[in-house]
Amino acid sequence: MLLAGQAQAQTKGPILVLGGTGQLGAEVVKVLTGNGEKVTVFARPDSKRDLLANLTVDYVTGDLLNDAEVAAAIKSKPFRAIINTVRVENNDIHFYEKIMTSIAAHAKAAGVKQIIHQSAVGAGENVKNFGTLGWDKVPGLLDRLKDQGIGEDILMKSGVAYTIVRNSRIWPADTPATGKAVLTEDQTILTPMTRIDLAKLTVGCLDNKACLGKIYHVEDKTLTWPPPRM
Image 1 (cartoon, one colour):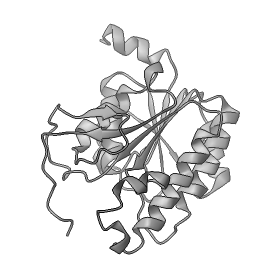
Image 2 (cartoon, rainbow, N blue to C red):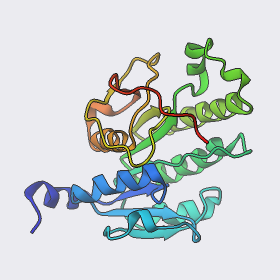
Image 3 (cartoon, rainbow, N blue to C red):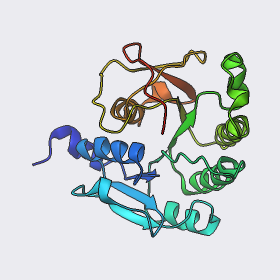
């Protein structure tokens, strides 16, 4: 039996999650389905789906770098919102510029009401707030952050209502939620976070008028920095 809130969620239209087979995306999908949302995950044909096992979700397959496949995915259902959880650290320093150009244009054409985009602390001009942290010594990092900023700018100028959530270091996937993380418009904030908390905060902005047109950082004062990535 569906609870009243779950039944209401299902009457609003489905949600398209990009990157839903990844660690953060899977947590977002779990929160959405737990709320009774109808969820479609856009994934490459070869993406592993084990993190979504036993969840009731639909799939559309394709490559985010293929404009025609992105268009087909967004047109496949009357999606009211798109949640982008894709995080890529490859050698393509124009990745977010490319995918957001496609996502935003086709979302606008299809009448999508909201795009929630997971970005990164330091994206674009925001990097100037962290100039003393030595990020310029990390190979490729500044180029990736510049690309993230371009992606944000494309989304903000698209005409689609947006919410941008910038994250930073995330604790390993088995870390329980603290329940203490919050979204802040203070763009100087830099703290770690758990995926579960980040997913809950992300979904909390869905259909939330207070989140529209906002750029948020995640703040969790209870966490220390996680161990270095191996």
